[in-house]
Image (cartoon, rainbow, N blue to C red; front, side):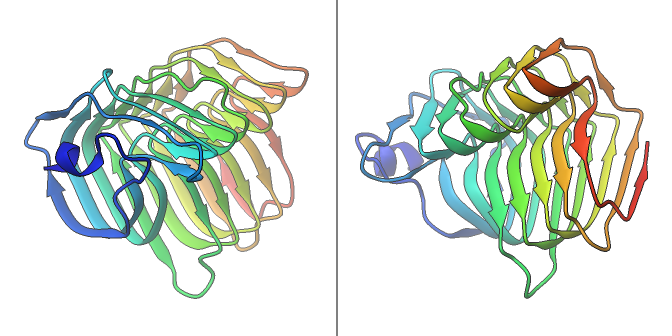
Length: 239
């Protein structure tokens, strides 16, 4: 049903909520190369949504100004369980293997859970604010948990870039990353990290990272680290 709606279209599925059970099946042959429409992903936005047991096949690809393998943006609450993205993702600003960006959600606190997930699709010509799972989170109140998940794709992008998350800027947030891995090469320009690229200007923030490893090479021109490239104005961080 999804393919009948989208093949030959430049539009992603808009403002989706509820539960999507993939039952281990794959979405195949969905190629979205957006020129006139800025967003590219399976979903434009996931709000109060659960996605589980789904594979986005390597025969799919998503290209646009803002791009994600699963969704361009997210709001309210989102739980992603046992999802694998194998699709290549290409964008110019705010690019993620799963979610491109979460932005300006200051009114109501959001909960995001990513567990038992794998990103295997390449992120090519990734522009700025790029991450293996989430590209960019800014001006939001949120509780984010990423557990038992792996970025297993090469990322070639700009500033900032991270193996799991590209940038966390000016948020009120509690973030837990546990039992996660980046396994492949990360190439960027400035603020390039094996796990997170940039953490800046966040208030009332608590970040805990445990049993998490970067096993891939990381390269760039300035501010390069195997773990967190740059961080400023943090309330509290535990590694």
